[in-house]
Image (cartoon, one colour):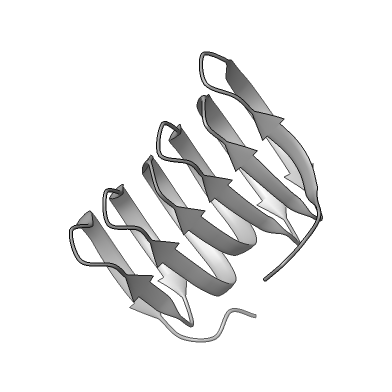
Length: 109
């Protein structure tokens, strides 16, 4: 899942609303809202997201609360926190990750 970085929300910044994209977006700040994407969302170590997501891929190193629908992959890093619902065909959870979520595995139409 290598896409060109389209946008970057840096530490100390926040955005609230609805976003759509096709490449890769990285959040190291705070995002609240909805995201619909044919690309990949990367939540950095300092990133916090409160959102419902429909993305191709999600890489979590920070924290997310919400409903996650990922067509290809959700990867949860060792210091990450995920709360909500995860629906994806492939889930990778690294040792040390914290998850308080309902997980639904299977293909996404």
